[in-house]
Amino acid sequence: MISIIIPTLNEEKLLPLLLSQIRKQGFSDLEIIIADAGSKDKTIELAENFGCKIAKGGLPAKGRNEGAKIAQGDIFLFMDADNFYLPENFLNKLIGEFKKRNLDVASFTICPDGNWFDKLAYGVYNGWVKAIQNFLAYATNAVLVKRELFEKIRGFDEEIKIGEDHDLAKRASKIGKFGFIKTKPVLTSTRRFEREGRLRTYSKYILAGIYMAFLGPVKKNIFKYHFNDLAK
Image 1: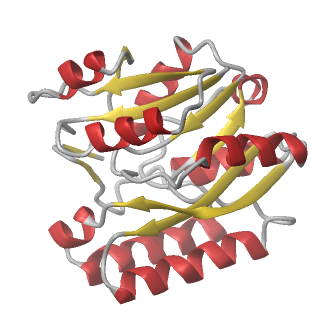
Image 2 (image 1 turned 60 degrees about the horizontal axis):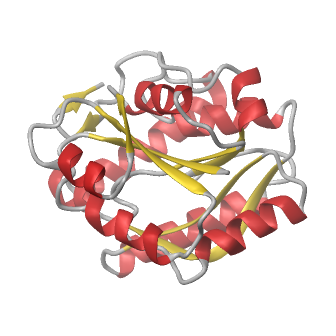
Image 3 (image 1 turned 45 degrees about the horizontal axis):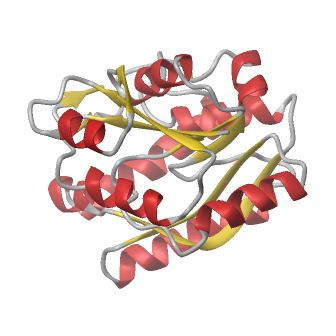
């Protein structure tokens, strides 16, 4: 079974799009877990209407860990609520290649729904992650990992302020096999760029990446990161 775990906070607009896309996949052996951080809108009601399990969340790392605690699958797929479009037959192809390559942890192609610059930036990033996959594990904003390995490394580090998905992939790759799975792109919202500004957001990501590369996980409040209404 595949457990899809999604942290949420006031996601009544985008979450139904993602849940509908998952349902259209026709992948029967799965469960969906929503780790909610106290939504004030209809997020939980909508999730329950789709048959999702509900876990008490918090900031993304905590939400993912809490979701994993009630998960029953042997493979965990961590996604964000703003990954709102999945290509046709995406889950079958993703899980099929994950098993065929005997991977333990993986990431895959993410593409924004924004302008040409966003698509170019993400295209370069996806290509870079694929190119370095054999000697450095780096994730997009979605991670696929075997339950056994996830539990062995004790899940996401909840002290990390930004880039906890990259940290998980890096730690998991030290005792398991990491791979980047090239799929037709999963579309993600550019709402953060529009809310905070593209220059500011891209600069934050680049500086955080440099920090992680040379100094390790970001556990200080150097970069302000907002999970909707919650701030790291």
